[in-house]
Length: 250
Image (cartoon, rainbow, N blue to C red; front, side):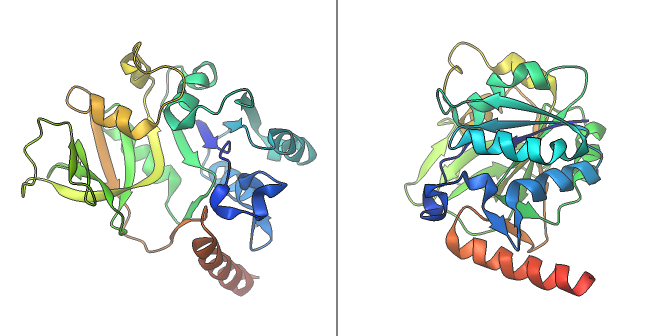
């Protein structure tokens, strides 16, 4: 089973912690966030992981080497020449990800109690191109899902923007769900990355652009234990959660 971890971000919201280290190596309750995500993936059965790098990328390479790649196959997708954002990062790593089976994408700065194996199996059970983790956290930007949890569009509540522009929204037909930054993609997704989707691009505009022809489903996570640790306040919350729970289990 294959997975990719986004570890190339600049981590500007975590400065000064990221002035001298990559965001992915910032510790959470004593362990780098990248290590936590790798171990979670390994425990869920993923045995080949691709990690993309940019900001202080050589530190991540050395970290993986020092830990013997945590006993699994780890590829490095090197974006030190140009940071490609989420969509561009996936496309650049295609040689590692493409094949006969779906692959999971996980941000390094996202921690949760999501059952990753069950999430992957759910994707396998449907004839879909992508499965996106969603939750009901407060944000200004939401995915628009229909009653079958299929992605139909996107909206920014603060600006009123709706995409695709021909979507009939507002409408009771759609629910607002926030993207949880974990997703499973079938290799078929690469067939939609045509000429306009090259170089640096974000994955959400891509999903919204293709959702009327591709099969993209949501997977709601009801748990409150989902942390975007790319911000100081949520890093502190995650620190407290993992310190409390891991101390109690010792």
